[in-house]
Image (cartoon, rainbow, N blue to C red; front, side, top):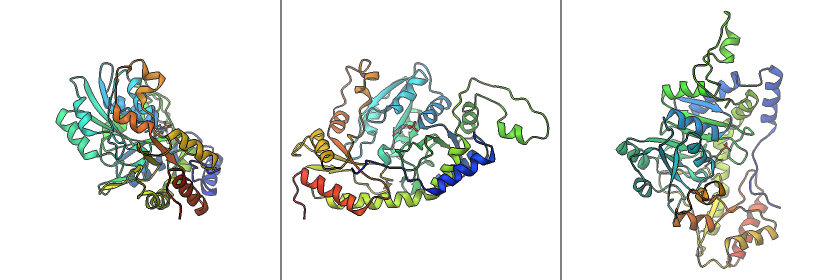
Length: 379
Ligand SMILES: *Cc1c(COP(=O)(O)O)cnc(C)c1O
């Protein structure tokens, strides 16, 4: 069976975790600080704050952006459910906008239509690694005096207009879950150029504690901490950070290897009339965290039939990104909401296996099985 995804982890990461465990410093400490510095430098952002996962990263971003009860935040419904959940955590209301069919990224025109006097922020998502049009949303945020937050859970290593994701706006949240391009088991990061946001997020992730363990540990004078606001325990451990540092060193290589496989799929499928691929426009550079295909009306099989037949042939696939407003946790509140583009996209998309290293024979098998099933003769 060809799996859908696999994290790229080697003896380097295992050794780094091993070495860290033996230092005796296993929760947030020097490795976390080093990972933050290196991640900030990689993205080109001034600061980075490591946290336990991207969901907690998004929660902190909402808090420091000042989003709270009674506010509305515009985001795509078509995303992983954590995107909307973090808005709920602060008592605000997710207002769902449509996506653009060619990229599945939030549509700036529809987002603008959804702005009301209660709108506080726009949360954009770089869907499965393809950057959203950040400049369009920056303009929109400026025009209406809104905060802009990026859910870049899938987008480590992607770039927009020649700059890495993480450097364009004030709050950019990343995930290191094994399903993303680099992993620390679980893990997350927020990059920012805003010093006040940076300092507050560092407090909030560690119980609101004024003195962190490392400073106290290294001090020659006795020190007592104060808890200056109600915070959280959203720490990353040094074991995870040590793995993350190794993963980060390989990130550009991992992305280039993933892109080689994506380009093979694109070349093999670009002439097929009954599907639509997500091709990068000029200025957009995807890490291809996933390879998604849209099945048009004239496709000989439904998406679910295709998934079953691929499975029968030994090829895993996934349905791709869901619509949050149709998930049970949201469907009552949003029962009257219709998002035809997002709903159609979610019902007719399929994600194919893409991971590294992927054997050429397996890439060929995915290509041939897919072509055969959508009725294209295989050479
Ligand atoms: C994976 C994902 C998340 C959640 O990331 P975790 O690190 O698992 O919390 C949030 N948003 C999007 C778009 C994702 O793909």
